[in-house]
Image (cartoon, rainbow, N blue to C red):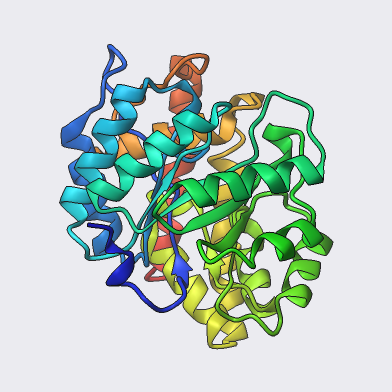
Length: 313
């Protein structure tokens, strides 16, 4: 049974897009999944989002996806909501994975636009409504134009929000004006959840009226991102300044090693391997850092960790 019935209030806070721990042969690293989930929950996160961009969903087999859904829902055991990414180019595959997630006990699914066919907003609206009609779980729209080449326009989001199962939107566009427009359009609809992806702007969007952030860095330092969210929710600007500086140091140092377009993913997962929370193994087409890049990242992570210790985060 879905845990949606248990979590009735609109989702708020920090919902990490959990990385997918893998072994050297590409299979799911179940031991690391267990360690990572406990690390996140003990860090105070408000939910867990699996099979998103940070979870490398597009490079995973459906078998691995199902294994991760089952283990995550079982281990979380209703302590926090579990959100599952079911984005696919085939609506049949998205429906099947959504129903598998429902049976496993997930709270909701998250769906980006199908990312191959050229479609317009009218076709996108029809697609989302068709999907929402066919599944039993609540759905979050996922605006990720850098990867899907299509923006969920604000008017489209408003129209889709009328569907009883479409309960929120995660925005990873990093476009502040777009997000301001969302907040304005939904200002009288507090039950529609607005979450932001880029962690660098999470505190800012909470001050604007959002519900929180889907912050990749919370995989590594969950307490920091929870503290920043709480500071923003409480309008504690002194704490916001301190924690925001830490988040920017993470962004500029951990996510930019090597100069790859995938440096964020490589940096985050490799840093997690230093903490014993996963192996630095990736789903193709991604591949690990060189030894030199690993050592450079290690120096940067040690420096950031010492700063966090000094700030008692």
